Image (cartoon, rainbow, N blue to C red):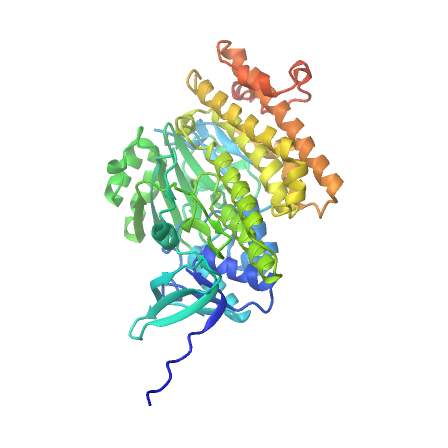
Length: 550
């Protein structure tokens, strides 16, 4: 009599991929469902190397608050990662002296902080944290095959570690967090292109880039920022059709990336380190001068031809879902990657909890899918055909003010007030949220048109976000405790009115210099009384006026 075949283990949740999305999802599931049986299968062997591991190092408010407070990882972030000094822009194309160009940033940290995250350090920590919480985390595990079912029976995953036989696991829930391998998306044909064709190259060097110490003619430039210094910011060196990121890492390395629209700067001009350095010598010579002595400290180099992608479906009533880049990805500008991990993971956790409670999934998967896609589409509008504005010192600062006001007023409020999965609140606020979404599209069109006629004056001034009280207060409001239903709805409706006033002031500034610009779409969306009185000034003073004052 032959021995009985070993029983295939059944897990409540199997996560294919133990990178940032998969590990944080496992922790969130375990936190929400303390007795959940979670298996995470990660292709890479741990510990992974610090610094030269993955991009996506800069976080903004939603992602930072998700890691720190939702997952309870604030101690690690504050002790072992770097506190980020906000986002900062220099209109520095062809310029060796940053004191001679317009700078956009804050002179002191804003109230709601975020972090520069060394992905190697963080993912090693997350793997250990999962195991401390009783999650089975298997590294060096290659997915050999999987099957998805629709009849209520468990899904099946076949995986293997090097030198070991193939193992099989069954799962009530199967989550694809495999990143750009996109296992489920490829299997089911869910890939969907979007209208954003930008590319990116990036590399790490094993020494910090001390942007504060770059040679400048104006000694007062260094004193514009209180401590912490500029090097802790996500620094953007911008020009028409591209931007360059500088992100410091706690391991002592610095991440450098070039992101460009191929209509302005083809990938073939920068797809090796030597080509990228030649490109920087032409377009960002100050950075090139800093990097040239660091050539021997190069740690890695990589590129994506078209990094932005969409997906037709990420949540299923048949108990599978896509997390992180396995589903959708936008653009690294404004660092939304960890934000959308936080949002997507929250919806997946809600669906698993509903299933655990014996509730039906179909309606909620459909609603969450629609909401998540609307967030993606609204944010994508910030990028599509907007790269030409990056070299515009007149228009881009106004775009940044708008984009962050929209983000902090709507999406960040929904997250921070734990309303993402609150279908009742979404229903009550449907008209206000839709109004904000339409307004954003109209403003992006105005900004693009404005950039087509802008004089692009570039005076040597700092546009200090910390000097704009309403902007600082909006950022601070993300730290407010939980609001009751009435107060939360009032906040979103107030945000709608604030966005309307800001849109009117943008239109008025643009048409003051360029009367032929068409603002009819905005006039159709904003009440007439707002055009008559847009309230207190919300924009920076004109840069040329600041320069005259200086």
